[in-house]
Image 1 (cartoon, rainbow, N blue to C red):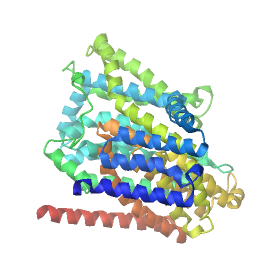
Image 2 (image 1 turned 180 degrees about the vertical axis):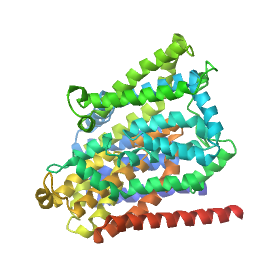
Image 3 (image 1 turned 90 degrees about the vertical axis):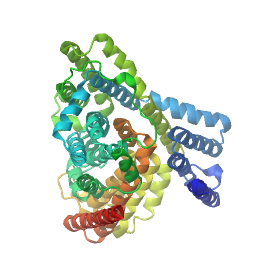
Image 4 (image 1 turned 60 degrees about the vertical axis):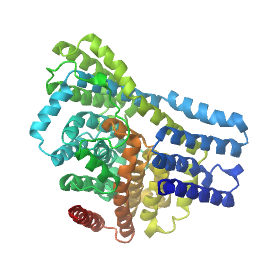
Length: 541
């Protein structure tokens, strides 16, 4: 009975939600109502309970297709059109998504090349001689994640590829590695003025200086800042809680995965055992350089635009695909000139790299399709309507915006889409204040706090969501079972989210960054120290 308790509870909660939906809105009017959130609830709940992500996502997609067919009156034709044509085919045909998939595959090929050339093995041996402890391995992963701040996708896959040999050597679980990667991806990018995220945010508010507004939001972006503090605390104290503790305890005994299967195959063993550290470091530098060049190229840097403008107007998907492909060609030439790989070995790596990325591609395809289902059911419109009802409560607005942004981002798996929906609502509420500020004026503090709450909540929900691109990329970069990553990360993310709620509640009444941020940091550290002390006491017992 205990074994099936969680499944029974989930089934009852879904049943209660469906009953509430029936009471409030007939199923024939599901579009733009509470019904629109049912598909992600089904998908995410099933994934966390059954530990099987593919069928869970597909169940959510089918639920969305059924709701759309019933509410639109299109029957079976509408169902298959929504799921297959508007969902799967349209997302695979989308140029932005295709660029991300191309970048994913190319990076997989590069990782296989680095492994076969012996670069990963040599780096692991070097790191084991210089990084002496688990703390050192975790801190090194954190620092590398902070350094690669230009794009979260690029961060997730690159940091994972470089740090896996180090964390494996020091028996850090793959779930912990995935958390370290994920916690230094979006949370770092959202406070980096030179990043694809800064470009996205700065373009959402008209009539003011976008970059100036983005920089103003950084001190109030509590989730990003507190997540970084929490990662540092956990890395330095080596204290874990929740299901992560079980993974870490197992890793200390040699089981890095706890459950789930290893993603990497036997065909990635080094072909050349004379590989050196440079055979990993130089390809990574080439990859970073080429991807940055690709991004600023798409922003018009080579057509006369300055670096900041080119970065803010770049097409991240096209730029990353272009840069990674150019890097792949240069890396193949480098390995062949070095004599560590033959042409045949390089071509075998192409097939192997693609094969290893198939699980991530499948999850991404289903996640994108599920997002399409929620959009077709007008879930964002429903949520934005709820938020607008609370705009009169300006003192509580940061608190409400953060909570709503978390829920919307968690359900849809997209942070960019979330702040793209909520920030226009904020600007509508404070339209007079923003008009008075203009391009060079002083933006009111409450506007900055509310926009920061939207950004922080969007990143938080994205950080927790199993259908988020960056969550999937982090699992892929760490070669960790996706559900393991999600289930171990959620308690950490929710702890920070709880502190953020308190911080944004304070910010509505005390519009002072030192008070808000200081109080939030003190509360977080107090909670973490308490968990640390209790954990040590239970360990002694």
